[in-house]
Image (tube, rainbow, N blue to C red; front, side, top):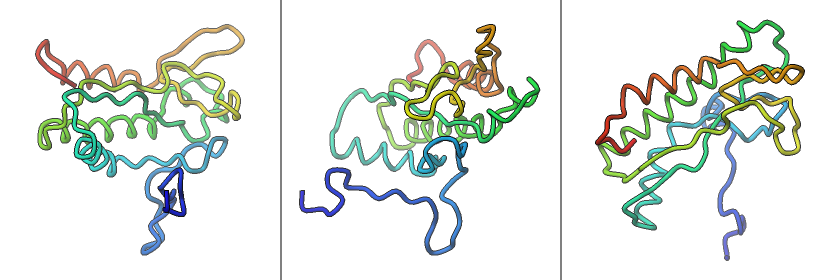
Length: 164
């Protein structure tokens, strides 16, 4: 409780102060500016959690990224090409696999945020976190690249005896 950042006890870093580079790809400006993709930190966080609070089962309750400027796109081929979000998921899941297989982290599952584009807290419909695009006029849903990448990833890495 003596930490000056209490109760958070952390400091948001948007850039490396030694080099001036962003810590990771930036999200849509319509959402919080703190939400940057930092998969290079995930494995260390999982190891630290296991060290502090040892467990035999761990889950990542939600992780996701809002595609920059997706709300400005009008053509479906542009909307479904969510390369930044796809990269976010694949690099984080790569770190998850390393944590499981090299560090022995008992990670039993992950949950993506979100399945569909939705109203996002104080930011409304503009930031797009979904792996499916929702046409709010017709309610038609269209899979984005990230949905296919996640499907392919889990198909390749899950077996009946696997724990990813």
